[in-house]
Image (cartoon, rainbow, N blue to C red; front, side, top):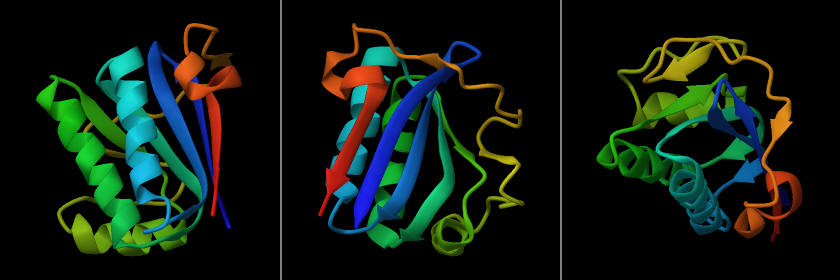
Length: 137
């Protein structure tokens, strides 16, 4: 299966969209991608989980590690509307978080996600064209 990652900008902050399976086989790639976004665009970001088809504890751990990194740099990582498979795992590892329907913003910032129509520009060479990456296993 594939893990599809893309980055766009919304309200001046990066939004990482994750699609596919976030599991043991791609968890390191997921964390490295998020860490690259944090280093290139700053420690405040959102992660859109609506297109995640499967997540295990390794995928959730990658998200938590990226959240720790963002917080250590004075920022935050906000989860956006996890799909049912993602929410199932996140409820286990983040029992104190309110996980609502897929159209709600979750995590450290209680605001909705605006339009993500501004793609990252050429300065983001590490992220690939238009801020997109694909990991195939």
